[in-house]
Image (cartoon, rainbow, N blue to C red; front, side, top):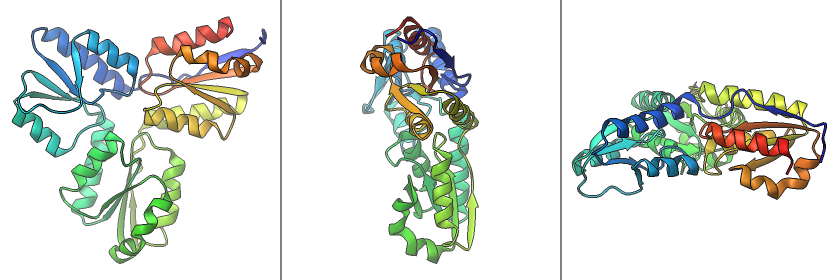
Length: 291
């Protein structure tokens, strides 16, 4: 083991404002309503430890709505489609909407572009719940809505885009700036009018910028967070271009990379927006102690 190595922890690591708000609010909701059923439709955030903690508090994660329900149903931080809101009401639940405020802004921008008859491109992963909700909100006003994670995915729509002339772009809040630029560069010669709403959230931008700087100064980057978390996986993808990078969910996975970690001189640790502070701290302590 390298005894003289330096270990840095990123300043922007762990819960962002939207995640903290969602987790704190749902816990308070249960504390204030101990006798009510509290359900979250889908995982509140993409982190197994947090979901397990909520379950122990009596806050249940459900993946399908029952026909009839009793209690409170929480809309998670990724948001939901108008149809989902309607179905929750029909089932008889009280709704508490914990959609991240930055995600709400993207939904609103997408709706405005759709209403103004722009061919709407949503930069993001089609299967991600945030993107599914953005698309569903825009599709209330237009059928000219597509999702693309990169410019290759837009090629089947090239003729439609050329004919439409007006193109609008919004971005999943946790996307890489590189993906947005790739799509903008592709769309520029195809459209007469191109309106770009850079809706990558400030927290994501700051986290990615800081992590890049750390990667330039260190020979190993450790990214902590769920493999299901979009912002965490994007962080790991970005850093691989700058330094050797390991993506782990928790300290137990460190042993799988013992040789790499023990031979590194300078290590920096960062984490996704849905990674709890105690998980990050355990990782740092484990590294300090030697794997």
